[in-house]
Length: 97
Image (cartoon, rainbow, N blue to C red; front, side, top):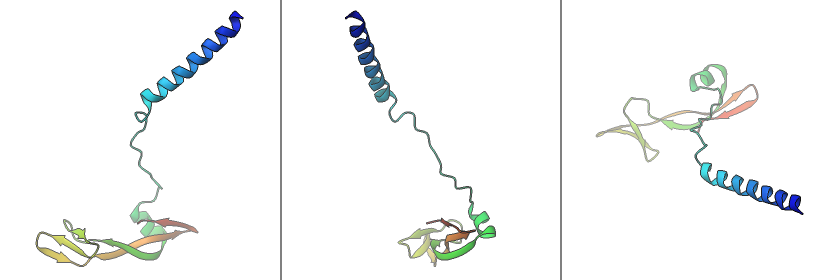
């Protein structure tokens, strides 16, 4: 009878300890993880074939894409360029959207 009570006590203690540890460290154990496919844009340009050009970017430094239509800097605007958004790298499609 005493051993059953001890086993039940240890089981409940372990369960409560697990719950306590979970709530104490929940969200604190995550790091800033950056997804790295191993493909930089320059590597993709050199080694893969562009399948579609749908990504709008501004060519000149300091310009920002506004309303997905124009590149603006102060009172100056220019048209955005279409860069490759989908590459074929030896049968593997890599998307940069």
